[in-house]
Length: 250
Image 1 (cartoon, rainbow, N blue to C red):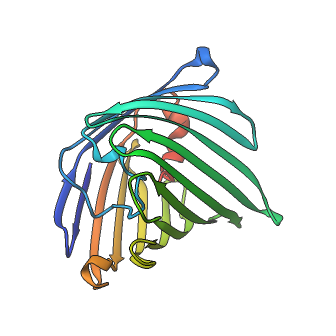
Image 2 (image 1 turned 180 degrees about the vertical axis):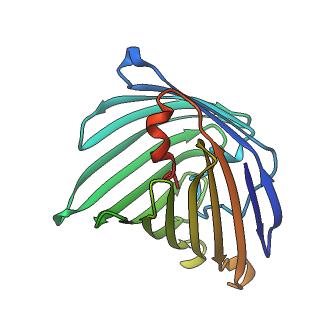
């Protein structure tokens, strides 16, 4: 359940439900997923890069993902599914490798999908990351999206610093610059976010508080202060072992 407020978007609320099933008989290669969202728009936590949140905008989305090949360095997966507005299918390739030294890691991810309403969309991202001691983790991500029915190419560069406060609490410092090449190359948004997450009352209940400042181009880069509250309830097989990991699902 998300609650949010910002200067330009006022107060917003959006519930969401997500289900994921793995199939042991396929050696964890196949996963079935289903999500249901409230019909209300939720712009406070939006990502200006096209396609990144496409499925989340739909009331109902479902699909199957199958890992064709995978090892410690790379994986290739295919997926197909549906929503209330379209059907889709595609393939994704991910490769992890040292980035100049063993302390730094690079990861290339490319996903090509076909949507019945928008045609082909290709999203390419490159991550550079490393651990900074026992309590900090740094990652910067560069993303570009090519779409069949769009003339421009949305781009982004996002730097994130994760901080472990305790076994129950974590912080994320997030700075992102978003751009587009259409009609001219320009910055479309700058976002500064601080996201705090902690286990709340039970291992399966997580609270997130995220104040933010954005500078959208559509409002002439005027500062747009906002804040988001999120409550997550996670249930499932081996959830007792994954309770700690749920704190870091930013």
